[in-house]
Image 1: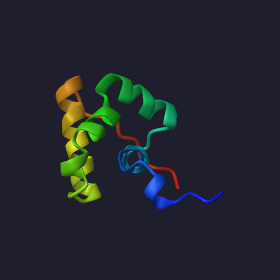
Image 2: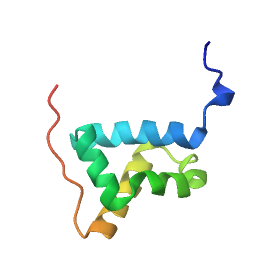
Image 3: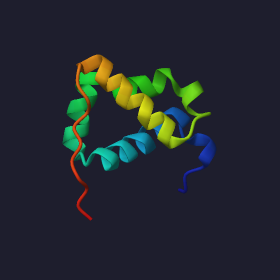
Image 4: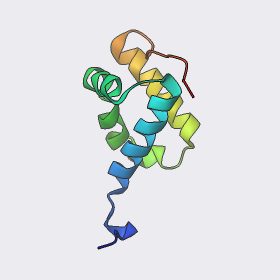
Length: 84
């Protein structure tokens, strides 16, 4: 059975999309992202801020998450060069 777009939770979709983009930007594995999420609650931020986030572009959302991580953790998120 094919998925119907109206059945997809828009918050969960945004969480998956932004998590992927954030991992790519910072060169994080899934495990590293999940550890960062446990520490800084990135997915929770996306859920709470869904309304303003869905009006922003991806770059703006990623900058907001970077600022959120820095405020919550007292440090910037790790950044490694991507290997293509």
